[in-house]
Image 1: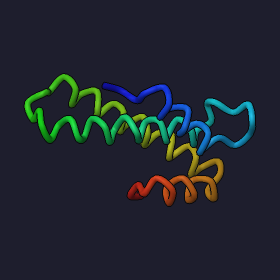
Image 2 (image 1 turned 180 degrees about the vertical axis):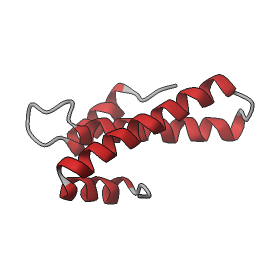
Image 3 (image 1 turned 180 degrees about the horizontal axis):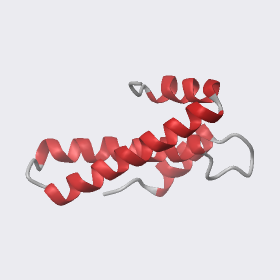
Length: 89
């Protein structure tokens, strides 16, 4: 199961930069992190689910690209997102 609608709205509310912000890099990173953590828990039970593992690797790659972009454009926002989500650099 993916993120529920309530959890998604909660993440958007926590990471948005303005009242109409629904797709900034911070929000996209937070949503991807939620999905990644969900899939990581899934793999503890289903270790041979290689199709989902490919999706996980694509999500991790996409999150890394967004983090690199944020680091290049706004280093302070990058550090804030890393700290709040507890992601390793």
